[in-house]
Image 1 (spheres, one colour):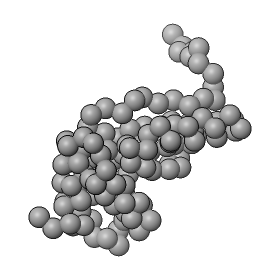
Image 2 (cartoon, one colour):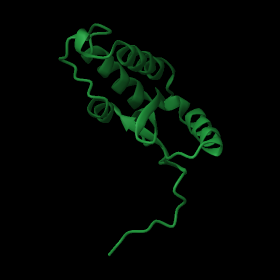
Image 3 (cartoon, one colour):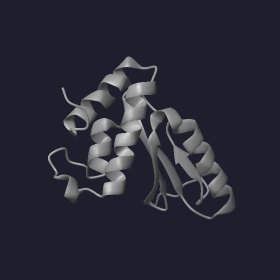
Length: 124
């Protein structure tokens, strides 16, 4: 049996963020195009839809929990800073600081704080 989607080939695909999600990654044709905090999910989705309206591409806007982000982006807490792409590390730290500071969800703030502590950005 062959699977044939009824969805158009070029589209924006997403799921709404869940309670444990901290980051949102936007993929364009499978390549990471943007990373933002879950607080900016609606803006990321709007940008993806606007981009898709002008380009033939497959876009996915994916909310990620802290552990999912570490695995997806291959960001290991025990890696020396030189082994991690500096721009990616800085972007992830900035987004986690935003969640830790601005999220109305106490669980999200705690998870972001725990990740920042694990990464050595803040001390215990």
